Image: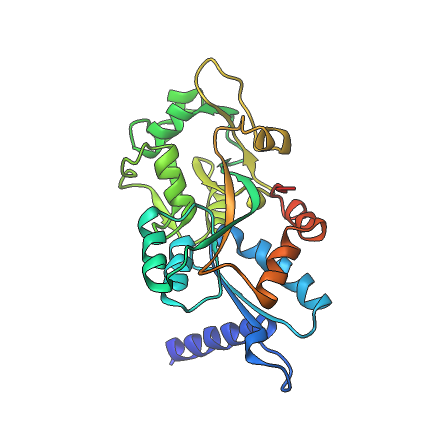
Amino acid sequence: MYTMKKNISLFLCSLVFVILFGCKGGGEKAQDTITVKGSDTMVQLAQRWAEKFMADHKEVGLQVTGGGSGTGISALINGTTDICMASRPMKDAEKQQMLIKYKVPVTETVVARDGITIYLNSANPVQELTMEQIKKIYLGEIKNWKEVGGSDAPIITYGRENSSGTYSFFKAHVLGNKDFANNVQSLPGTSAVVNAVKKDANGIGYGGAGYAKDIKECGVKKDAASAALLPVKENIDNNSYPLSRNLYLYTSKAPEGKTKEFIDWILSPSGQEIVAKEGYFAVK
């Protein structure tokens, strides 16, 4: 009985979310509902975009859901979303699938910049790590904080699930496409990673800069001889931060109608102002 009630409660919560972001008045046309799905890194940002855009465009409904970049890309390929949010670029094989199905190239739009942040517990004395040290921590080769200048305590690693674009980016750019250690705890969203590290004095995690609130940010060094950098605007804009990246929106063809109007607005000063407010970095 408890399980049934819990499932009903979750369904109602999901229904409310769809109503808030996806439904419109009875006289409006269905094509004015735009679905946006994908990156959990971007979902809060996209919700803020949706709220502001719908406030100024009463004729448009926006339905925003997360699930990870891979989930969003699959939905775009399958034709079940209008816009895919991705915190990694689409792979060539994914673009080829789109081309075969829709006969036109997928349209990629960079809508924000980000720096993957290394999260530490506020009690951790470590202030900086090299890219090589981060790699060895997540490969399980460095297991104790004393090996990187910290306390004599085991390192507890937190990360994202493999449908996440952040997971894919981190694996490619930090681990050199090697597999994560078996003891890395995969969590279903960046908020969960941040919350886990907040509660764990020996924890370390990674995720988007927009989620780095009330958490210690670790300086990242390209190598032992480099300066330790944080993901701040100057370092992201000049690409000096080692884990700088783009955030993307994808559509199955060149956007048109209300979808184009929404994406154009995201790239406008009003849309980019929201990017900065949410802790990311504007592209214009």
